[in-house]
Structure formats: C-alpha cells, structure tokens
Length: 81
Image 1 (cartoon, rainbow, N blue to C red):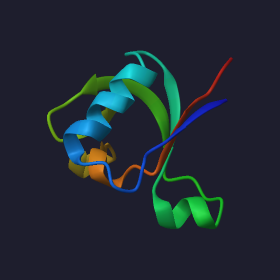
Image 2: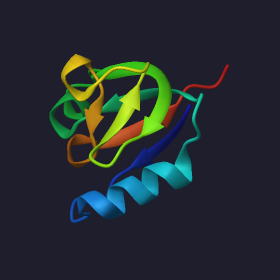
Image 3: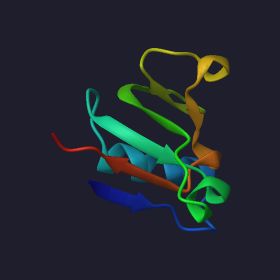
C-alpha cells in the first residue's frame, strides 16, 4: 500500500490537490482520520469514484453515506492488488 499523509497545516484546497495528485478514479483506497490513525483503525475502505468540491467520493456514496471530507483525511493509501 502506498500512503499519503496530509500535512497538519494543509487547508481543504491543498488537501484536495494532494489527494488528486496521489490517487486516480478507480483506485481502491483506505482512508484514516487522525484519531483512527493513532489507534491503527480504518475509517473507510473503497473505490475512489469522484473528487467532489468538499469531499472524496468513495463507492459512489454521498458524504452522508460514507464518503470522506478532505479536511478529515489524515492518511490515505492506495491498496495494491
């Protein structure tokens, strides 16, 4: 798995740019926020289906259904395989 850790001082626009540079539509990813990263938990695993204005769309779901806001991403990793 190839991880991208978001700098603590990055704003939403910068985070979106970093994520878009690291991922492509169709990549299978694991997304963790800061709290879950500390306890090695996983927040969301799924396929990237969109780079929306305020969030990373996972499995075609809306933000309320399980996609992740950019400002809540601490680490995102591509799952190879």
